[in-house]
Image (tube, rainbow, N blue to C red; front, side, top):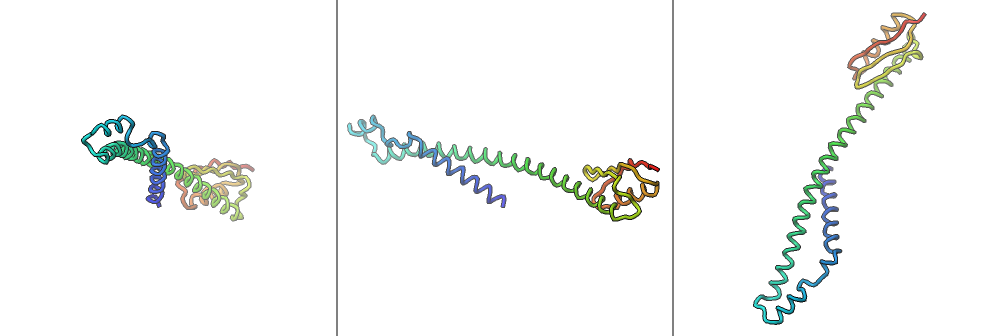
Length: 165
């Protein structure tokens, strides 16, 4: 898929370069300038086809060099863009994992009848969980912490739960 998009972008770039080359007013001029025609009429020893080939070869080489430079810069830009997109993708995946962890802990706390989950706040950052709020007993605090620790993808749990009477 990456190869396809790279080839597509490269094809668009090459097409744009060729279109720009042919749309340039300079490219529509005759291959033989007026002075060349006069010298040819005076008895030039070279054939007109050789002159045409020489004149055509110069712009073709220039266009080929321009295309090569453009392709190199395009490939460099796509590498940078891929790295940027990969970093953004990692951030999105991490935040989605954190949201999933928070939802899993919250759901498990609500399912446990021995815990009042309405007073417990859950914060998740890179797999680290912070529990804060109020609980009614030490056993409820331990149970909430254990539920958070047993949740998949959780690295560590910090409990800032306060025991309120």
